[in-house]
Length: 357
Image (cartoon, rainbow, N blue to C red; front, side):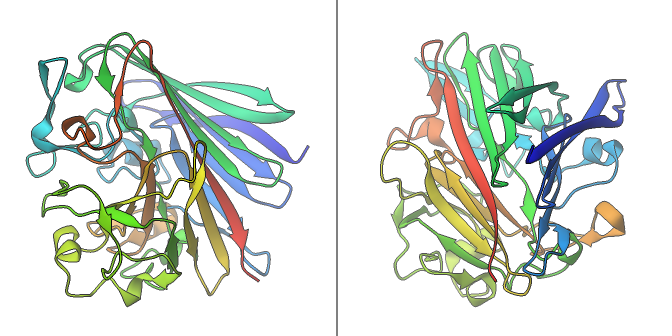
């Protein structure tokens, strides 16, 4: 078998709930570790052009650190990833008020979002390969959101070593949902996520438009063309070449923290991004069915005590969050994030670790 999946204990939460770790191992040496707390990607070991493995995602060594985490390191974000203006939205004329936990707005499901839950784990097989199914039920009214929600995130590794993450959700009444994974990447290795440690990475986005935002991260218009802006990553460009430009969008986000519109050719998944670290040759290609991708250059990570005694710093890593647009519940021109008993959520993101030799 090209892929094996092992499970082991990862600790017990402060309220006494057991948490497990699930380790996918590919014959190439590629290794993915996921924990049932927050559906977190805890580690991702990828070979460089010389075959040397390095863990390329930020994370923590202990469950207690994940319980204390405020930077959503590696987790699945929900019920609603990104921002909802003023924490309010309406469905069918009924107004709902959410926690306002980010500059007067709601972000990433609030202080008790999906990242703070222990998900129920099931190991299954598909096409002869192991898959990990993590399930979480969110009752009607939790966090201010309407509807009892049943959510499932499925992690799988293909024969080629691609990592597939699929998101599934059903609801018993109309509600809004936006799910993503919030891993921080440094392709040289998480040990290099020090000050400005990601700036040598080159990013290519298959996106002709992006969403401009105000200083609080709320979109100020419909998507606009990237042409003539620092947001134009249609050809491979290092963050260092753009991140310090005198541009209002970069000032608003303290770096890159915007949603780009994925150029979808039709139904199904499309390439959204290719991230490359030129020294190691490690590359990630991200494909998704989601309409957008949020690129965040860890602008507010400061003195964060991570794995292996490493202290993570500002602009030492980057998030590539495939998702719907921020504030979609209040924008009729954006792709809808409203789901009903007759309309369930299903989205897929594939992360392809590659090597440039």
